[in-house]
Image (tube, rainbow, N blue to C red; front, side):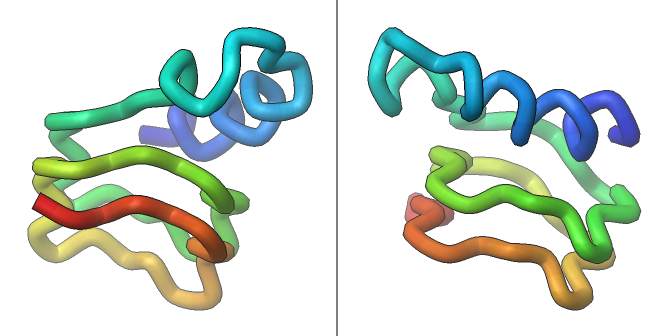
Length: 66
């Protein structure tokens, strides 16, 4: 979970393949500590986030539907 929290902003900054290449659809992040995570523009439809801590996470333009 720490890997996702730290790797996503780096992947987004180096992304040249468009938003679909940053797709985390169906990711399992139950009980994840994602407080203060920079997840803007993340695509996580059908993600499992049960009991995940998203306090003050940046979810601007994020797609969490489905």
